[in-house]
Amino acid sequence: MRVPRETSVSLSVNLGGLTMKNPVTVASGTFGAGREYSDFVSVASLGAVTTKGVSLHGWEGNASPRIAETPSGMLNSIGLQNPGVEALKAHELPWLAEQGALVIVNVSGHSFDEYVQVIEALEDAPVGAYEVNISCPNVDAGGMTMGCHRPSVETVVKRCREVTRRPLIVKLTPNVTDITEIAKAAEASGADAISLINTLLGMAIDAKRRRPLLARVVGGLSGPAVKPVALRMVWQCHQAVSIPILGMGGITNGTDAVEFMLAGATAVAVGTANFINPEASVEVIDGLIDYCEAQGVNDVNELIGALQWK
Amino acid sequence: MPGLVNEQAAIVANEKVGPGLHLMKLAAPQIAARIKPGQFVHMRLPAMNDHILRRPFSIYDCDRDAGMLEVLYQVVGFGTDHMTGLQVGESTEIIGPVGRGWEVPKDASRCLLVAGGVGAAPLFMLADELMATGRELDVILGAQTVDALVARERYEALLETPPRCSTDDGSFGFSGFCTPLVDQALNDAEGEGRPYDYLAVCGPEPLMKIVVAQAKDHGVFCELSMERRMACGIGACLSCVVDTVAGKKRSCIDGPVFSGQEVVWS
Image (cartoon, rainbow over all chains, first blue to last red):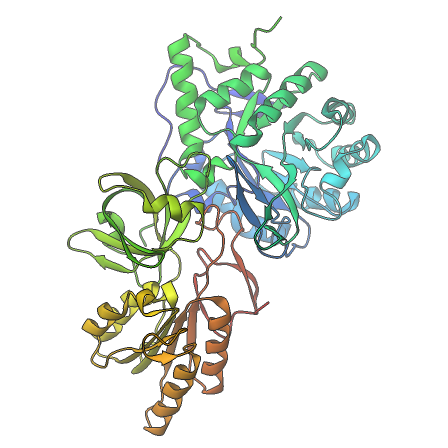
């Protein structure tokens, strides 16, 4: 079980009121609730563990096949399969607390009410922050359908804000004309931070069989292929809002993490890279330390938005 | 229970053994020491950076003392095609031992294994274990052609009665699919007054569906090994789910071996 190496670099960051011991978490849906990865990395050593999207009563998810490999990336259409918030509270959150992990729970719903009910159910559980998922492209109601238009973004964020004082991170979809408009709507409605990007809507086709590779035909693209898009959006949002950003999209190593922080991210999430290398999350922390030490950076906060471009 | 490891595994052999069929030998002492029949490894191939996902492979055979694993693989796409070009001395990275393997009831005394094509691989370690524990064992192997019956000799060397074989083109053994041989074996065993009490099948899904139904008709407990596209391979991503009577289950760690009664066929 791997832990990050020792360093004198100060790694702690504050993500909208959530104090993380280092700026690296995992992207929701790529890490379960941490248990599956605990043979490989110390979940407590991560800045936080972000859990798989959870709904009120649990969802079955989509038909198989649910994934397809694409150039430098993959498509998924899992469809937020989860056993519901009570199962998360009963089995996963106590385990994470026992490990000493800081937890961000990704909250999903088919309706405004459901998001609120999930958060209400979690208020007495050991949770550090909520990530409000209004960006999943693989569900017919809620998810991305809620995250593409200002009015629904404002409603869901305001309604969630009313029921919790915990840090509220709003996860944005890249499948919009102008992500800064959505970021501003989230900020104005009470979000403490935003996270981006969720996956890019895409598809893949088997020409020989004249069939789509995914049962649902379309799915979310992730992995190194999306990194340039994600970096651009983090950079744009950093200029558009003053709340901190949790950046993600194709982060595989420490240098990728540094690039996201330079573009304006306060913290970063490792997603698809966990599938390639189960130690990726800790490797990213180590790589970030390597960079800071080599560049004479004493505090990782110095990197946030430090891109020189004017 | 010891958990999963991510082991650097050097390739010690990688050769063609049949049409589109290759055998890779890997030095992986940690996984070889404790992998069980039916479990698999999740392999990251070298020099395949733009194809980012690992590939799951069942283990054909394992030499625990030498720390060696054998993988019998069929070329089905970019990854397995790339694999055929890997040289001895190159290194793969494998997560293992993953999954729920075959769970033969302790009191099962007469067993039947049914393999279609490369499905012969994940059944061989099971056959070895069943022989070592003194069960009466019959094996049925089906393949498209005689050249594709690459596991036959190994099974012959292991078993007391040689495997019954079928080929789609009639080039060896029974001509046609192997399912009539399964019916015959089930009937013969009943006729002898010593019916099978365990059946394991691995192969293409349409074959497994038929064999599961045959086992059910004869009241024989049956297990099968499911294959799905996988991302993480360790239970986190929910890519590889199989429909079961208890809802969707992960083929990586809830399987790949499931009981015949469990699986709901699409």
